[in-house]
Every structure is written in C-alpha cells, then in structure tokens.
Image (tube, rainbow over all chains, first blue to last red; front, top):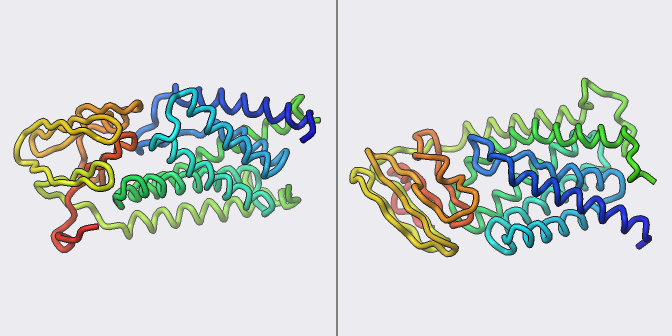
Length: 165
Length: 128
C-alpha cells in the first residue's frame, strides 16, 4: 500500500473515531430504542465514494475494533450488533456505489441495511421476534438520517479537502 | 460514480426517489401486516436465549434478576410493567418507562432481556 493512501486512511479512521465517540455523547433519540444519526458513516461513505470498497471496509472494521477498545465493549452484545450493522451497511453501500443512486441514495440504503443487520444480530442474540416490530420505524428513520449524512458527504466533496490528492 | 446524476429532482435523483418509495411502502406494509400486540394480565420476560418466564401483572411487585452480563430490576405496578433498574450503560430500557399498549416490547440489548406482552390466545402454548 502506498504511503500516501496509508496516511489518508489513518486520518479518515481518526475522524471516524471522533465522530463515533461524539455520537455516544448525544442523548438517544426517542421513540425507537437505539435510533441514532450515524455520524461515523459520513467517513465510511466518503471513503467509499472517494477511494473504494476495500478502503471503506478497512475503515469500518478498524473503527469498530478501536471504538470498542476505547469504550470497553469489545465482544459484548452491543459490539456484535454494531458489527453486523456495519457489515450489512458496507455490503449495501458497496452494491449501490456502482448503480445509479446518488450519494444520498447510497447513504439511505446504507442506513437501512445497517438497521436490518443490527436487528438480525439482536434477534440472533435474544431470539425474540418482537424485535422486528422496530424494523419499519428504523427503515423510515433511515430516509431523513441517511439524507443528512449523505448531504454532509456531498458538501465535503465540494470543499476539495486537502485529503484529495 | 455514475453519470446519471443529471436527472435530479431536488437533491435526489430518480433512483434515490425509487429507493425512498420502496422503503416507505415496505415499512407501511410491515406495520399493517404485523399482528397487534395483545394485552393480557401477563408479560413474558426473556433473559438470554434460554430463560423465559411469565410475570403476573395483577400483583404489584419488584423483582431482581441476574443476567449474563449484569442485573436488572423489574417493577410491576397497576397492571403495568417497566424496567426499573438495569446495569446496562445506555439505559435505553429504563428510559422507555412502562410498556405501553401499542409497544411490542422493552428490549435491553446489553442484558439480553426482552419484556413483551404475552401473545394472543391462539398462539398460546407455542414454544420456540
């Protein structure tokens, strides 16, 4: 791997860690348990559209590992749920990347697949089908929340950050 | 990126709008087709994957349980049930308050606990 790419990825990872940490400080959104904005996805989406699928997966996985070490949640149920969500989200967004969806569309699909992955993981852990009652509400929430994060990535792209080289 | 971004409607392009419509329609279908939770005098509490039991909501009570990752306290008062205390970090289950009639369940992921209404009589006796 070229040094310039390695440096860029390290910076993006650091940024995603800060955003993921900031998100834990925000009060949880009501009324659906676990609903959140998904700020760290800004960086993953940016990496996906600017660099590629492989790089986005690296950022996602390293972020999950690092943030769980920082918060002390490694291999706990919350970690497993976040892991499944991130993996599903990456698959969804990678699929959408080469389709006709705009960045906003990719972001919405990423949010929706993230929720689906999380709930599937929660179901595997707990085994209660009543969990799926949250799913349509999480899907609906993925439209505004995904649009917001997608819009931020669009603005980032227009800014011609020093990260562009 | 694809060059199809020229056909934009507002900030979304046509594919985005199709995706949004698909999400809205499937969510509405999901909500309308899923059975309404029934309200009986009992709630089912599941801790971990194995342990599950019924709680009589007609008796006011406070109960402590150990979970795989901590402990929880349930409170039953006036036929309602809530998570009074939980050892989890986010406290989402405690903040949710009493299990409302339109809600399916109170879930505590860190403690692997689900509190739900006992399903309607025709499904009684079905075990996982």
